[in-house]
Amino acid sequence: MEVTWSLDPLVAAITALMAAGLIYVAWKELSAIHASSKAEVLKQLDARFSKSPMTEARDEARRLFAEMDKRYEHEREAQRALSAIADFTAHLNELKKANDKKYFTLIDICAFFETVGYLAYKKYVLFKDIYELFGGSILVAGKFFETHIKDLQKGPPPDPKLYENFLWLLEEVRKQQQTTQPT
Image 1 (cartoon, rainbow, N blue to C red):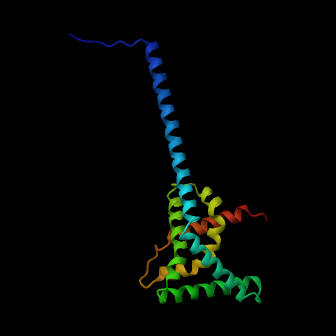
Image 2: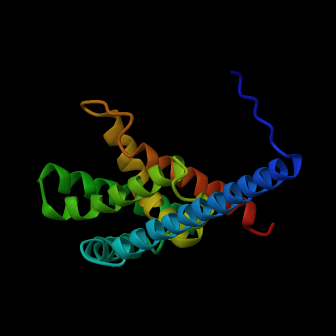
Protein backbone atom coordinates (compact mmCIF):
# COMPACT_ATOMS: atom_id res chain seq x y z
CA MET A 1 0.00 0.00 0.00
CA GLU A 2 1.42 3.27 -1.14
CA VAL A 3 0.67 6.50 0.67
CA THR A 4 0.54 9.69 -1.33
CA TRP A 5 0.64 13.08 0.25
CA SER A 6 -1.49 15.77 -1.12
CA LEU A 7 -1.18 19.28 0.24
CA ASP A 8 -3.78 21.82 -0.63
CA PRO A 9 -2.06 24.79 -2.38
CA LEU A 10 -3.81 27.24 -0.04
CA VAL A 11 -2.56 25.37 3.06
CA ALA A 12 0.94 25.25 1.54
CA ALA A 13 0.91 28.99 0.88
CA ILE A 14 -0.30 29.79 4.40
CA THR A 15 2.34 27.48 5.89
CA ALA A 16 5.09 29.10 3.80
CA LEU A 17 3.94 32.60 4.83
CA MET A 18 3.85 31.63 8.49
CA ALA A 19 7.35 30.15 8.23
CA ALA A 20 8.64 33.31 6.55
CA GLY A 21 6.98 35.43 9.22
CA LEU A 22 8.55 33.37 12.01
CA ILE A 23 11.96 33.61 10.35
CA TYR A 24 11.56 37.39 10.07
CA VAL A 25 10.55 37.72 13.74
CA ALA A 26 13.49 35.55 14.81
CA TRP A 27 15.89 37.62 12.67
CA LYS A 28 14.59 40.88 14.21
CA GLU A 29 14.95 39.45 17.74
CA LEU A 30 18.52 38.30 17.07
CA SER A 31 19.37 41.71 15.58
CA ALA A 32 18.02 43.44 18.68
CA ILE A 33 20.03 41.13 20.94
CA HIS A 34 23.16 41.76 18.89
CA ALA A 35 22.65 45.55 19.01
CA SER A 36 22.04 45.51 22.75
CA SER A 37 25.17 43.42 23.33
CA LYS A 38 27.23 45.97 21.37
CA ALA A 39 25.69 48.75 23.45
CA GLU A 40 26.53 46.79 26.60
CA VAL A 41 30.18 46.44 25.49
CA LEU A 42 30.39 50.21 24.91
CA LYS A 43 28.79 50.84 28.28
CA GLN A 44 31.33 48.56 29.97
CA LEU A 45 34.26 50.21 28.17
CA ASP A 46 33.04 53.64 29.19
CA ALA A 47 32.65 52.49 32.79
CA ARG A 48 36.16 51.04 32.80
CA PHE A 49 37.56 54.26 31.32
CA SER A 50 35.77 56.38 33.91
CA LYS A 51 36.76 54.47 37.04
CA SER A 52 39.86 53.58 38.98
CA PRO A 53 42.53 52.54 38.04
CA MET A 54 42.06 54.24 34.65
CA THR A 55 41.24 57.60 36.24
CA GLU A 56 44.54 57.52 38.17
CA ALA A 57 46.42 56.61 35.00
CA ARG A 58 44.73 59.38 33.03
CA ASP A 59 45.33 61.93 35.79
CA GLU A 60 49.03 61.02 35.97
CA ALA A 61 49.35 61.14 32.20
CA ARG A 62 47.61 64.55 32.02
CA ARG A 63 49.93 65.88 34.72
CA LEU A 64 52.99 64.65 32.84
CA PHE A 65 51.72 65.89 29.47
CA ALA A 66 51.19 69.37 30.95
CA GLU A 67 54.59 69.29 32.65
CA MET A 68 56.34 68.28 29.43
CA ASP A 69 54.44 70.88 27.42
CA LYS A 70 55.28 73.64 29.90
CA ARG A 71 58.95 72.64 29.90
CA TYR A 72 59.11 73.51 26.19
CA GLU A 73 56.67 76.44 26.05
CA HIS A 74 59.43 78.70 24.68
CA GLU A 75 59.66 76.57 21.52
CA ARG A 76 57.49 76.86 18.45
CA GLU A 77 54.34 74.73 18.59
CA ALA A 78 55.51 71.92 16.28
CA GLN A 79 58.93 71.69 17.94
CA ARG A 80 57.37 71.94 21.39
CA ALA A 81 55.22 68.89 20.64
CA LEU A 82 58.23 66.90 19.39
CA SER A 83 60.32 67.87 22.41
CA ALA A 84 57.51 67.00 24.84
CA ILE A 85 56.99 63.61 23.21
CA ALA A 86 60.72 62.83 23.30
CA ASP A 87 60.89 63.89 26.95
CA PHE A 88 57.81 61.82 27.82
CA THR A 89 59.27 58.77 26.07
CA ALA A 90 62.56 59.17 27.97
CA HIS A 91 60.60 59.52 31.22
CA LEU A 92 58.67 56.30 30.47
CA ASN A 93 61.93 54.49 29.75
CA GLU A 94 63.38 55.65 33.08
CA LEU A 95 60.26 54.54 34.95
CA LYS A 96 60.34 51.17 33.18
CA LYS A 97 64.02 50.64 33.93
CA ALA A 98 63.42 51.48 37.60
CA ASN A 99 60.43 49.11 37.64
CA ASP A 100 58.45 52.07 39.04
CA LYS A 101 54.76 51.55 39.79
CA LYS A 102 53.99 54.77 37.88
CA TYR A 103 55.17 53.10 34.69
CA PHE A 104 52.64 50.32 35.06
CA THR A 105 49.94 52.85 35.93
CA LEU A 106 50.68 54.82 32.76
CA ILE A 107 51.00 51.78 30.52
CA ASP A 108 47.47 50.76 31.60
CA ILE A 109 46.29 53.44 29.19
CA CYS A 110 47.92 51.53 26.33
CA ALA A 111 46.44 48.25 27.58
CA PHE A 112 42.97 49.79 27.68
CA PHE A 113 43.23 51.12 24.12
CA GLU A 114 44.70 47.77 23.01
CA THR A 115 41.47 46.14 24.16
CA VAL A 116 39.34 48.83 22.54
CA GLY A 117 41.33 48.49 19.32
CA TYR A 118 40.88 44.73 19.31
CA LEU A 119 37.12 45.05 19.75
CA ALA A 120 36.90 47.56 16.91
CA TYR A 121 39.25 45.61 14.62
CA LYS A 122 37.24 42.40 15.10
CA LYS A 123 34.04 44.44 14.61
CA TYR A 124 32.57 43.46 17.98
CA VAL A 125 31.76 47.16 18.19
CA LEU A 126 31.55 49.74 15.43
CA PHE A 127 34.66 51.85 14.89
CA LYS A 128 32.36 54.88 14.53
CA ASP A 129 31.10 54.35 18.09
CA ILE A 130 34.65 53.98 19.43
CA TYR A 131 35.71 57.11 17.55
CA GLU A 132 32.86 59.15 18.97
CA LEU A 133 33.34 57.82 22.50
CA PHE A 134 37.15 57.84 22.79
CA GLY A 135 38.54 59.57 19.67
CA GLY A 136 40.13 62.55 21.42
CA SER A 137 41.64 60.42 24.16
CA ILE A 138 43.04 57.97 21.61
CA LEU A 139 44.72 60.81 19.71
CA VAL A 140 46.31 62.29 22.84
CA ALA A 141 47.42 58.91 24.20
CA GLY A 142 48.76 57.92 20.80
CA LYS A 143 50.68 61.17 20.45
CA PHE A 144 52.57 60.51 23.67
CA PHE A 145 52.79 56.71 23.78
CA GLU A 146 53.34 55.80 20.11
CA THR A 147 57.14 56.17 20.14
CA HIS A 148 57.43 54.18 23.37
CA ILE A 149 55.21 51.40 21.99
CA LYS A 150 57.27 51.17 18.80
CA ASP A 151 60.43 50.97 20.93
CA LEU A 152 58.85 48.18 22.98
CA GLN A 153 57.90 46.33 19.81
CA LYS A 154 61.53 46.42 18.62
CA GLY A 155 62.58 44.81 21.89
CA PRO A 156 64.61 43.21 23.23
CA PRO A 157 63.02 40.78 22.84
CA PRO A 158 61.23 41.92 19.70
CA ASP A 159 57.43 41.73 19.93
CA PRO A 160 55.86 43.39 16.89
CA LYS A 161 52.37 42.39 18.07
CA LEU A 162 52.67 44.30 21.36
CA TYR A 163 49.90 46.94 21.41
CA GLU A 164 49.35 46.44 17.70
CA ASN A 165 45.60 46.96 18.07
CA PHE A 166 46.17 50.28 19.84
CA LEU A 167 48.43 51.42 16.98
CA TRP A 168 45.86 50.23 14.42
CA LEU A 169 43.15 52.12 16.30
CA LEU A 170 45.31 55.23 16.46
CA GLU A 171 45.84 55.15 12.68
CA GLU A 172 42.12 54.70 12.05
CA VAL A 173 41.26 57.60 14.35
CA ARG A 174 43.85 59.79 12.60
CA LYS A 175 42.35 58.90 9.21
CA GLN A 176 38.85 59.66 10.49
CA GLN A 177 40.05 62.94 11.98
CA GLN A 178 41.52 63.98 8.63
CA THR A 179 38.31 63.21 6.76
CA THR A 180 36.08 65.07 9.22
CA GLN A 181 38.18 68.22 9.66
CA PRO A 182 37.22 71.15 7.47
CA THR A 183 39.90 72.15 4.98
